[in-house]
Image 1 (cartoon, helix red, strand yellow):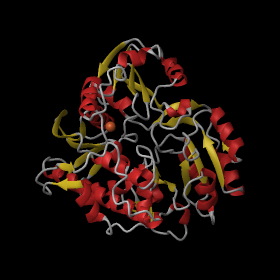
Image 2 (image 1 turned 90 degrees about the vertical axis):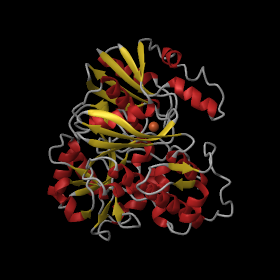
Image 3 (image 1 turned 120 degrees about the vertical axis):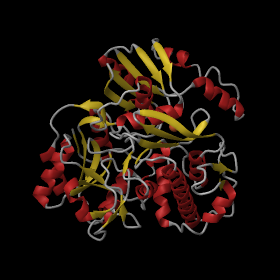
Image 4 (image 1 turned 90 degrees about the horizontal axis):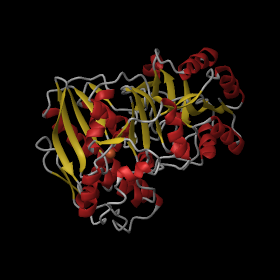
Length: 489
Ligand SMILES: [Fe+2]
């Protein structure tokens, strides 16, 4: 029995394949179509997924009828044709039975059934699906129950995207850049102004309700038009991030007080905000965030909601497979010679972070390496890179929560020694690579450490700003030729 989970027809499409309830493949459409955040399915993705056989059933990640009603209420017109999923899938020659799961149920069950946590609270925060924008769930004795729900137009995710657009970035895509810019601004200058303009909370610990004062579906470009200098943009970013962190603390406080649990699962696009995620560690002993907690990850989540069964989660290497041994020796030699190279080997990561199988790697100790990598990646000069470190060396170099998937930030103990992987506030978004990881990347880090004494590498995704991460052998070759950086497969 082959089941496909699909999230598409909105933004950043994803497809997951389950063979008799075993997850065997998952990828974002963009990796195959080469269109960043491609909202639609792709014929090459479908052809690749069919190596496990044609689907016997499809599970769709949201409810198209509820979505149509919400769009109608939001004044976006009656989108009956656009939301006809049967006809949408049929245009890709997918004609099997379709099941539908509510948008936030896909997030909640996806987090719950990929975790190892029982008796847990689940918080889902995103921009918008059907009506719901923020839900809280309780899992006790293997039963999941929704205990709070908040609906459009009150959406924390939409507000954060509107602020992303306000500072000249792309909404639904560049939110992580706003998060990075925040470290260069003053978080207090506009905090109250932003709260007064947009946000109303109803009592810390009393209710998790967050009211958004304006309908932000079309952005907030008209907010404070007097703010236009470069430093103003950094201050808006810092104020926005500070307000978001305040809201997350407000929500987490209520959730903690109203559940008897010490475990938290956090899902939805907002769970990608690794800086704010640190706040959650104050309230919760164990936290699980699925490595792809946004809508493309719901390709997995909707199927898990439909089956209502837990899967054994090994890692997030679920995509296109470049077969062959991990090229450890070649990488180490190149890093010693030039300080930088790419690697594309094994199954691609499912989610926004490259974790060693589609990565651009560099020696973090080298002078000016940050500028060199930023130049190659055509990114803003201020943006730092993340380190990947052998798990057993984490505490020696960093202080803070440890994450296998770069979901939290930690204070770097030696920012002067590793400036390329340290942000302006002396924090790093660390990937801690565990001992029993069966990835070639762990073995590379071990060999690199043995050879140089350095237990970490700078690790960033193998792509250029605005382009999807390299997927296939051909993409790797094209990257190498175009940007004159060696990429080993
Ligand atoms: Fe979502």
